[in-house]
Length: 252
Image 1 (tube, rainbow, N blue to C red):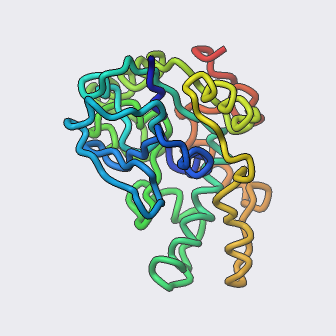
Image 2 (image 1 turned 30 degrees about the vertical axis):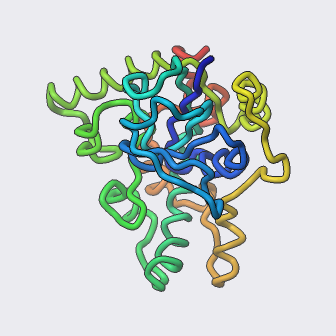
Image 3 (image 1 turned 30 degrees about the horizontal axis):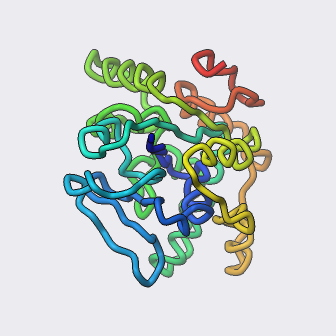
């Protein structure tokens, strides 16, 4: 019996998956690296430190805290997966989500324009944004700002490590390729049943409109801003059917 562990990358549909599967008794949410949360968002939810999970019946784990060392703590063999997204669509989603979070978290309508945000997005809270590949290197990789040129041997080593680790994944889903349907097929192999009523969680465009704020689309950017997007996402990974980047050969 195997367990499926899913790396949740920011703005890549992970929240939808969590809520779609969280009612399964063998599902666990891993927001941080050292604990699992069972019955997530339920009145009887409970947390278990990762080193105490040997006897837990867990078949599906999703979260920002997932890493490749889960096999050290769980009894079942681990299969790893993630969801990737067209980097340009992701960066636009992240900017709009940043504006929304500034309102909901800080009660402040931000006046930070897109160009300023994208240059500093790796350092801006409440939602700093990193390249998708950085999820698959060690935490030191997050010191490389999204879009900054990799200009040291150490940074190149971290990048190469991340790309190599991507090839350790057993399943890769793409948001632009009907990822929920594809994931449901695989999840069935792990005895997981989806809540089909949940198909989209972060409706940022609608939520922004409730505060009188427009959602910014890529087509509305200036030529200078589009160039910043191109430079920022140049080394990132994304959808094999992307309209903005060439296919990723390791997943074809």
